[in-house]
Length: 298
Image (tube, rainbow, N blue to C red):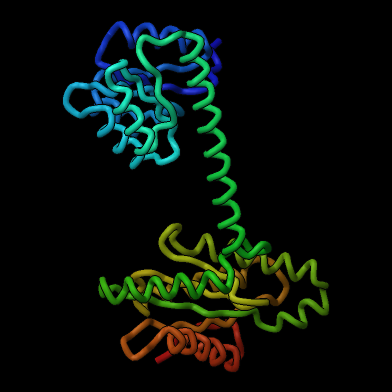
């Protein structure tokens, strides 16, 4: 039966005896122990193994402890790093605190003191991880539509603005789909709003599965209206994606549920509002022509 560790600690020290003593001490305390004898090895280990706590000697051959610390904090700003220092380098340890070290331990150290400091550092790391997770969750909720799981109206305009800046810099294609559900009010009146919400949720899932993850993005623009930003997609490429979304929704099993889709590819005649308006106008042309079709803005 494998041992359940309470955390992962990396020890970076060029003295084999120190690595051995601290390693055994922390292993008996319940930690998984990793070791490195240079700053360069330590940085590589941080990237690969993602430890919770690093014990880092200030006096290392080649890249010294403070240089290594700065690089580690660049890789993972919330990682707890404890500096190991001899009496003669306490000033360096204090300097390390300015660079983001969690604490420092003077050599020779008392075993109980070292364990206490490492336990505190682990607790701090877990606290910062949880804080980071909660902040990410708050951010996600602020830009996401609860029902469909797509991004919301506000995030649409922020993303579009950023993509237009990138397009100007890189000269890539950018296409926009705007669509809404044909006769959705009548569907809600006939089947009720709970069933209507099921339709919206299903459409959100279809949009997500029809576009490239982490490249394109889907939005609930408002009510039963949706938007899709297709990065690097020409009009012809966007037309294929639009028709895939349209046909998948038509075949999704909901009675008489179809969508009207408007498509616009960005060109230099547009500003942000003009681009959205072009796709919007194409959507209304599709709707006024009977729905369940894709129109492109010429």
